[in-house]
Amino acid sequence: MPARKVIITCAVTGSIHTPSMSPHLPITAQEIADAAIGAAEAGAAIVHLHARNPADGSPDQSLEAFSPFLKVIKQKSDVVINITTGGSQTMTVDERLKPVATFKPEVASLNMGTMNFGLFPMLNRFTEFKHDWERPYLEGSRERIFKNTFADIEKILTTCADNGTRFEIECYDIGHLYTLSHFVDRGLVKVPFFIQSVFGLLGGIGAHPEDVMMMKRTADRLFGDAYSWSVLGAGRNQMSIAAMSIAMGGNVRVGLEDSLWIGPGKLAESNAQQVTKIRSLIEGLGLEVATPDEARSILKLKGGDRVEF
Image 1 (cartoon, helix red, strand yellow):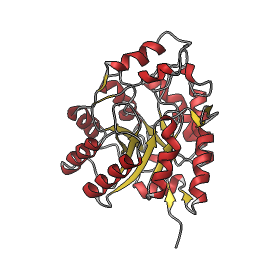
Image 2 (cartoon, helix red, strand yellow; image 1 turned 45 degrees about the vertical axis):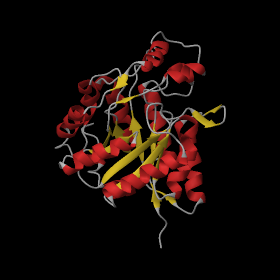
Image 3 (cartoon, one colour; image 1 turned 120 degrees about the vertical axis):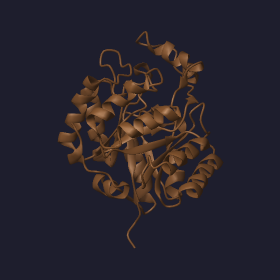
């Protein structure tokens, strides 16, 4: 019997961490492209991409920020490209949606609910910042919400309905699975779908093993075998949560968006380093890492030749 294939997604830079937190966080288009290609070479089948202003590292959802690295990655790798519709909590849904609506990737992320999204605890660890926007951005999450209303979600789904884009459906709590079920029942999300369960972010579900098992049990009850399951653990929870998912038959997401660390108190030097670490665990358990084309087959993706970049 062939070994089970595990899909590794690598979230390359994100909008959660600021440049002052790690010298290894990709900022410029070239750095993001290099990081994505390196992650793919290490074993990631999918790369999840945000963009940043190269001058100060702030989140940037403009087409001009995405276009350079999308083209380079496509030219140099067959990795599946996943563009965020999350952007950052400070952006409107129209700003967040524009890159996906324009570039029509194989995969896009989609958050399943409005929530508190607490980044301010990072101020307990990081106290000195290079750029003026960083501290207020983190501090502002005390009173800011991450807005993903039913109308917002529906707008993203309907805007992308004819693009062939499938979604990495990000669920930060149990209620987000029920929101997904609502859109499945309405026919706006088509099977098979890809659920990314997020653990350990302040404002969402915790990172206890019981939380992981409850999320999986609920998804199984609601969706049966109509979905593929993946997990990401925030910060120090990254590898332990990933290990649970592998043992439970799921897939994994790593990358510097989710955690800057490779071990206790030790910064990861690259996205590829995290991919290599989780790959060794997958293969150590007698499983195999899915290639990009195997991920395309499992998730029923349209193919890299049908994107607009």
